[in-house]
Every structure is written in C-alpha cells, then in structure tokens.
Image 1: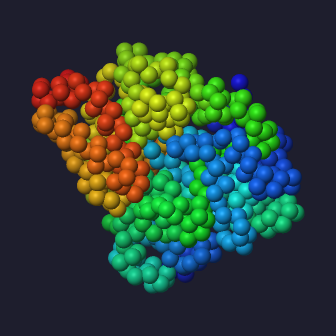
Image 2: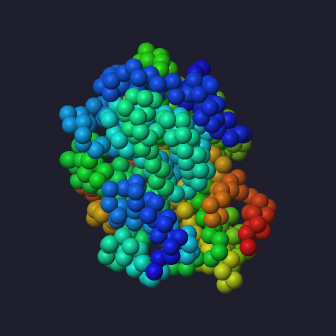
Image 3: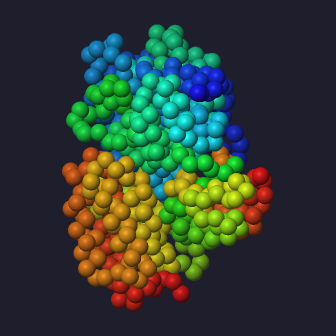
Length: 424
Length: 154
C-alpha cells in the first residue's frame, strides 16, 4: 500500500533536511513543474487529477486555481496555506508539517507557480510551536538552495514564502477570516462574491489551500493522474490521512486509501473499542460534522459517500463516542467551543450559539424541560447556510441536529430523571 | 514608547506586508513577548508606531485569545478542553491543577508563578489529555506526570 504523503515521516527523529529529502526524490516535482511545464499545464493536471480539498470542504483544488485571473501577469497574486488546524478532534496537518516540512514547501512552490503568485504565506496556528520551528528551518534551507527567492532554478520565476503564526481563534481557519487575520485585522468572514480567487488577500487574487491538499501536489506532478486515481478505493483519487480519538484501543493517525470504511478504520487501525466500552457514535471529521451511528459503519470515508448519509467527511479524523460518555455532555462541550469561538459578526451565530450552550448546560445539570428540545430544534433554521457569512454556525448545527436525532432518548432521560444518567 | 528592540522586530515583519497596520497582530505578539501582557500603554505604543488608532489596536488585541489584556503569571498553563480531551478525562486533570495551585480557569497564583487557562484543542487528540505550559507541549497526562511537569517551572 503506497503512502506518498507520510513515507518519509518518522516521528521518532527529526524531519529530513533539504539534502536528505532531495536524496529520496523530494523537490523532483518542483523541477518538473517549473522547468518542463507551463502554469496552465500544472493547473490542468491538478484539475484532471480531481484532487479534492483536504481541509474539509472537499472542493477541487485545480478548479480553484483555474478561476484565478491569469490575463494580467503583472497583477500581484497570493497563495496561502491554511495551517490553522483547530477543529477539535483534528490533528493531521500538524503531523504533516512536523514530520516533513519540505514536502509542504515543494507543494506551495508548485501551486504558487500554477497561479503565478509572487508571494505565499503559511498561516499556522499559534499552538503548533514545533511545526513552526521545523517549517522556518526548512524555509531558510529552501531559500539557500535557490528554491525560494529570485529566479528560482534559473527559470526567472520569483517567489517569497512567509511563515505567519496566528494569535489564536478557531475562526481563522475559515478562508476569508484567515485572510482578514493575515491583513492584521479581526478575523471576520467576508461577503461573497467577490470570491477570494479574484479578490482575496489585500484585495488581490488569492488561493487558500489546506496543508494536506498542498503536500499532494508534487506527487501528482511527478507521477500523474492515473497513479493518483489508483491510490483510492473510490474513484475520487488519492490517499487520505485518517485518524481516531476517544475510547479506542489505539488512537492515532494513518495514511490510507481514500474510501476505506469507518468499520475498517476503527477495527483494523484504531484497534477497536477499549475493553469495557461500547461504540455509540462518531463524528467523521471534527466537531463541525454530524454524528453517525452503528448503521453507518460500513459507509466509505469519502466526501460524497459520507455526505449521502447526512454528515461530512470533514478532516477525516474521527472522534468516537462511547457508551459511557454522556452524549449531552459531549454536545455541551462542542457547542461551548463554537459559542466561544464565534467571531460575533453575524447575529444567529453570536446570539444563537450561547443560547444553545446554556440550554445544553441546563439539560446536562438536570434542569431541563421538554420544551427546551423544541428550542434546540428551532435553531436548525436560524443557523442554516444563507443566514450567516460563513460556515461556523451551520457547522455548529450539524452535530446538534444529528445528536438530537440519534440520542433523543438520552436528552429525554436527562429531563425526566432531572439528572445526568451517566453520572453515578 | 516601544523599545528599540521591539521596534526592530516589528520593522522586520513590516517588510513582508504591503502596509504597516498589516503587522498589528505580529506587533502585539512581539510586545507581549517582551512585556508579558498588553497594557493600555502598550496599545498606545503600538498604535502610534503603526499609525493606527488606539481603538483599532485594542479591538484587535481583545479579539485574539493568545493576546493577554490582563497580566499573567510567569508561566501560563493552557489545558485543552476540547471534546477528545473531555472523553479522555481532562476534567480530572483540571481538578488536580486547580486544587494543587489553588486557582480556577482565568486566575493566577498569588506568587505569580502560574496562570491557568483553557484552550480549545491542541491537535494532539490521539494522545489526550494534553496541555501546554508557555510554549512547551505535554500529552497523555496523568496525575503523576502533571505533578512532575509543574516542578520544572518556577
């Protein structure tokens, strides 16, 4: 089984330096793209490969690049790597950055070349100190070796790469808010259109891609579309970093063919449930994705397949809910997070999420009433897409709506018994 | 007034961006690194240097969780309260820290040694529960481990 993204990652030692990475074939994709291909050929190839955004939305990366206006070469353009991984339960980008920073730099050089960006930024979350250190070291090496800066590899192409560490806040992971933060302002989302690809950072055309998306680019350039498609079980293409946390025997992160089932992930890789715990449900990829239950374990972990059963693949790092963890408490924790991290820009999010949090806290404490459940259900329409500028509130609604559906009896027993039945 | 050192560090960031105010967040982080937290005085210093209004700088400073608008202790403990850490028992680690240090979330010990704050997900969910102290990361926390870790910080 091929593991292109993680084959050179060894968590026990320091990541490969530039020389070592070149010795195992690293940066070959950069040479090929910049010396043998036009920017359009690079974009077309990535679009043909159907590389879908690994940040959670699953949007075609090549298609995004193809929307960047290329008619005016003199216009400033930007590539931004979204490394603000902060969704509870997600820990894949950190692994990729700490484990092989040069792979990300190579991907960013090629992506920048494809859209003819002169400047690229990595927006990394504050807490990822080790990743920040390793990336800065790798960026300095890449400048010294002529992969960054002026006239890269003698091709006449110039690119500066800047590492920007955030000051905290989950909303920075939302592409438009991330750009607001990078401009030195409050991280608030933007009204679209205009889309970021035409009017993004500092008002210029900007592509924002996730870490896991960008690290795939050099491999696709080197090995082609057919190879990429052959990696996945489903037709989508590629491998995926899947992870598991919660009460499983072997929590962790694995690079696997895109499209393995939840059951395979939990049983073959995460080692099944810890002794004494039974599976009750899971969030497929972070707290902004809806619950799935036992019936869904044979669903393939691909974007379309998970969407069809009412959730989203998200980041592909599952959070397992066991039978001894209270689902109301679980949801209370999740909604508290969303309420706290709302940027406060739109009313349904700013007012609705703390309301939900308070109701869940009351139910959890045994002070709930049956009509509270109707209030929670009514939030479905207020927090829906179209009422807010970004996906924060709709994301917060996903575990809530599905949690109410699948664990309704747990809510009722909290209210009827006036206490949490999970607490002895 | 910003110190010469602070000015040099902020100036270094300015060259990466098209205008001065774009480095506001970097400037806040730099000043906080030197002064421990961001006082009203620091807000004014930064505003003046970046040619922004005090109010603009303050609105940005109060937005970001890792910019402290109140003094913090010599060491800041950031305990992850994300859902994976909740499942794996961060609450018992919180109880231990809180009891041992005599403070709750948001408070600082009287000797100014520790401030205890929650943080949402440190991206270490497969080794939960986890926490940071200053810029150091710790995971798979147990009672014994936490007690040992605290000893290292004065």
